[in-house]
Image (cartoon, rainbow, N blue to C red):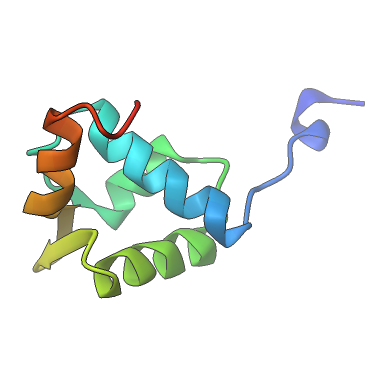
Amino acid sequence: MSEKCNRRRVDDPGIVRRAVILQILAEDAEKRWSEAELRRELYNIEPHALHNAVLMLQHAGVLERVGETVYVSRAVRQLDELDLIAV
């Protein structure tokens, strides 16, 4: 079986939300990400699941949105700076 056949795309909401936050915090917490950039980096996640995760995180106040870009809220950035979020 080819390697491509063995890979499954992730769509579990909890896993996807964690992946989005970890991706954003692993780089630069100040960086703004478009959903297209997140899709490129998190290529094994179903696009609809990624979109839904971004909306859920935004609604919960974890992410903020300006136009087409999202970034972590000030509260999340502060928790990350205090090493209360282990990345």
